[in-house]
Amino acid sequence: MIGADGAYSAVRNRLQRTDRFSYEQTYLEHGYKELTIPARADGSFAMEPHALHIWPRGGHMMIALPNRDGSFTCTLFWPYGGLVGFERVDTEREVHDTFVEQFPDAVELMPQLADEYLHNATSSLVTIRCGPWCFDNRIVLLGDAAHAVVPFYGQGANAALEDVTIFMDLLAAHEGDWQSTMAGFYAQRKPDADALADLALDNFVEMRDRVASPLFRLRARAEQRVHRWAPRWITPLYEMVTFSRLPYVDAVARAKRQRHIVDRLLFAMAAVVLLAIVATLLFAIL
Image (tube, rainbow, N blue to C red; front, side, top):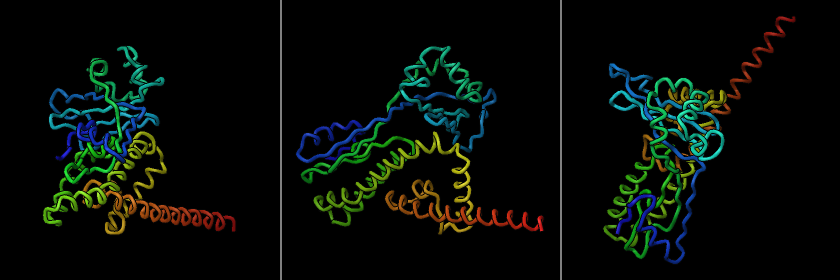
């Protein structure tokens, strides 16, 4: 039996009753709600379509992604409680006033804001870690049933498809031996699933908070520049995760090494600039 029945898997629920099955379910204090920026009257996009739009606000954020019909799907990530939260903002007036305060440039592009906010569902964000994913050489968990993650890296479906690819590759390599395949699959894939869960959680903090930091943006630009000059030397973490089959664990390890390299380059550049300023001042004095 293959349990690929989602984050609230019935198959996994039965496995939780077996001996030595570990299970951890963690919810963020934030939820999410989808809203819309419609296309203009002529069908064109109201914002730049070739971009991920982010409104980072430290403890919360809104993002917008383009659709083929000229509209944008906005996703609002708010805490449930607090002054700016789903439980607090629950009337048309509060919706309008809060959005004018938090996202003033977006409000004028969202004519159905209050109606959508008050009627569209608010959904929770859960991370699930469990194991082992295989039982008695007869049952295996795949996808969200094995490793549900929050959506901030956009890798949930990709990770599930990669599960299938790796499982089938192992089954072929073991010539149809399910026992060896299941054991090898869990040993190979579990570290990657845990790494992806951590990546997704960290990217939430990055998107809602760090992207507003000038130092963060400087480092990101420096990394992109070095990548263009020497793509085999430096590859941004997002590209490694999204556009390659490099295991998530290896991508994280490589990104850490690259971060040290970029930090050293930035430090060296700052030192050169500082020395140049000092030399100029000394020359002017003398």
